[in-house]
Length: 192
Image (cartoon, rainbow, N blue to C red; front, side, top):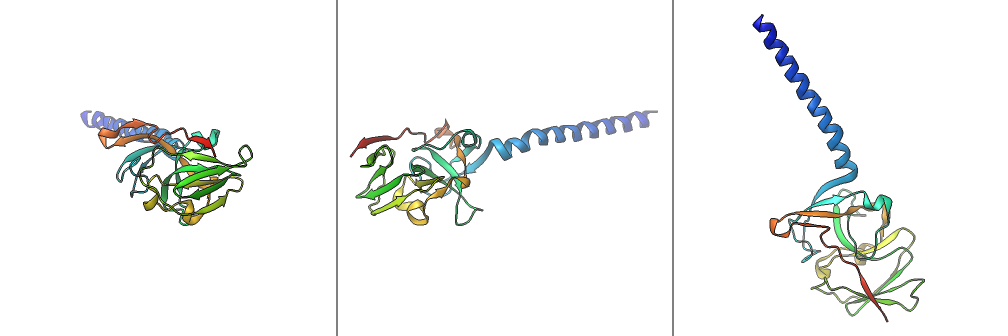
């Protein structure tokens, strides 16, 4: 009789464990695939905003219901190798022309055909190339905050919207830098 009771308890425990695993998977997998995912910063291209080893949680929903804006930090699949993920800041929006000269960025668009100068107080490292790039529909110009150490749109062209995965929602590591929406900055411009 006790053997039968022990077997029933083991069956019940096994059933409960399987049930728990199924419920956990039904909840966790969709969250991980469609809502939020972890991301570890690798490299110095966004220094000092993000440092090598920063542990981030990516918000994957915002850009499904809205469009990225100038100044947003985005995580995206690298267009030349979609198995790799990059983190950069959006500088140019679809349909705009980005002018880069003497370390300054100006943006020309329908509303400002003569251009507006982008104010970037988050920069501590400048670079001094000269170029003009026109964005097509659904294309963004992205740059690292540490320009001399960044592989970005200056080298491989505009980023198509389809490669954008999301934006940083939270920084969880290092503990001294825990924050919500890290790197968030509302871009400022001035008429040229």
